[in-house]
Length: 175
Image (cartoon, rainbow, N blue to C red; front, side, top):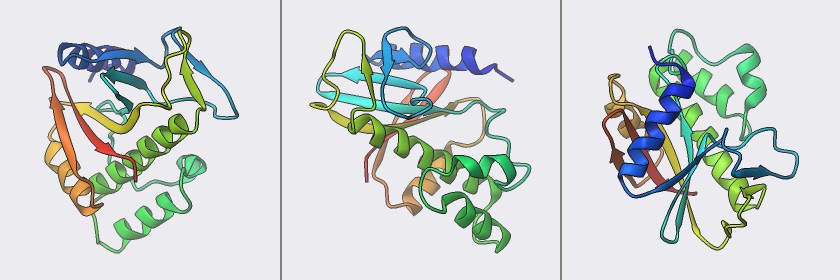
């Protein structure tokens, strides 16, 4: 199982190979303003597009139990985790689908904050004048890409896949 920082580096390398300039959350290039406690895991720039990316390692994609406890305090839109937990308990979706729904919601939250100007780059790149998209990255060596595709379709998202050697990033528009 890959460590979080190692996987983030792999996603960055895959996106750079696809022609993007990528800044990870840990890079000194990113700045934060406002009350947000943390940004997305990465920002990827190419042309007039910036993708706010949430990355999940295999360990973070553990589907052993529905969202509960401390994880509920990070509910980025009213009731998402509670709704997902209820859907899982009612057998409407699997735990795996539920966790992806929660992570996709989290990715959308960060992209919305980016659009609102909560964070940016030290060099002053004008993010707000760019087309902001949402990105959700998972490792290629897990059996989850079909599930993510199904969840995105169920959520009514049109998406494209940016596949790399070590990761796949699903890119879609903000709601």
